[in-house]
Image 1 (cartoon, rainbow, N blue to C red):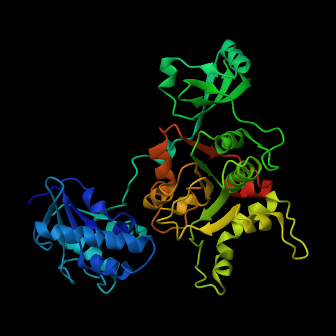
Image 2: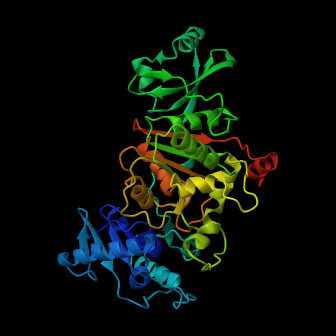
Length: 439
């Protein structure tokens, strides 16, 4: 069975995407034995890595009916999958310490290359890619996205418009678009319309797919739970967050742009004041920044305290930091009444969440599969808000493009119940904005 290329797959690729073996076309997919052994150590884990390791094991076990895995079994139309049993593959390259698993994977790639095969090592480990380059082996990251960070959907655009059309929009609170114009817009895309030759005169709107035109933004003179939009992007965000027709909102922006604060404020406004949802559920993945502190003492609430504290900081701000003399604050009372709930994402699998305003913070640390798991939990009447910054990723297997937040934005941008906004202007403080821009 011939193949034009041989792709050697690292363990981290299979932990990221157990179906990756089917995504290399009509080529040979080669998995060193040490990779299978590493996956075996993950199979009992109850996290995403454990589930993916078990999924891969079941997938490959089903392929055994097609022949010997050591000799190669067919995948796709003309491709093949082969699992090596060599613990010390022969290679002429001296100085490789085969007691290190990464080096053993690299040695397998070297051995195949020296035997005449066109080899590409696929790994999400940057250091292993550097080692491969030093030994003359082609190495690539495993990319699941077909877009670049520059091509990522922004959620809004600026267009020039005649003064008469701007006047029509202001008068009728609606502007019908021409057929040619409609084709260029995504559903719920936000628009900054300024008069031709006069950028200072502008109107803000949102493209409404069913109406075939631009509608004005939802505004609140009193603010949203005491929070007022400080820039154009925040106005777009509040419109999406308060709109009953939009079931999924994604907010992306650097630190200090107000993503989490706006989402929680809108959640409290629509749930507590407007009573459109049964409760506000705020959650985030448990992924540490920097060195992990290990196991934390106390009951479940005490263990989760450090992870959930950024959320409570925003809630404290919204309630004016009313805590004093150990008396229950307003948000404490809301939590006791079940109207506000804060929890990690660890146990969301298998749940159904109807009629809730669900906010998922730090969504850039989720894999595409985890994002799918979360969104499919939404029951009737539930709204999901994803917030994050693809430049602040703490998950070692994800990057600015191959994370669940970016994957979700790119795949769902054409749906009429989905809206996205990228926040650019930092509003936390002048110091925070300087640090985000210059450091």
